[in-house]
Length: 72
Image (cartoon, rainbow, N blue to C red; front, top):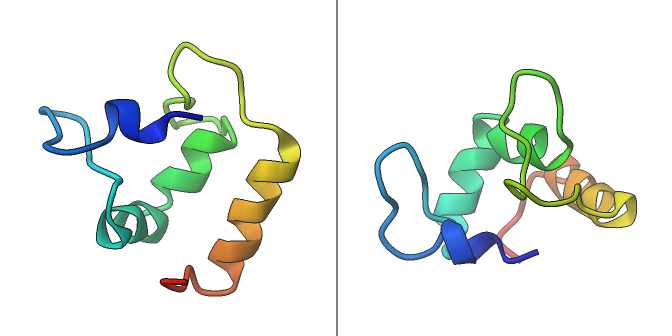
């Protein structure tokens, strides 16, 4: 889905970086990752300007998060 195209390397103001586990885990912990990819109310839908991820991919993220978002 190209997440790191916008969220890679040095993040500009108002943005965040996802190429590392710690960057991803921080967004999991604050609920923003799942809220954004699932297009939930109150979150900026991602990918921005693109179609929502396929449900099967969102479900994989949800399962990973539910298992504790391990660094695996």
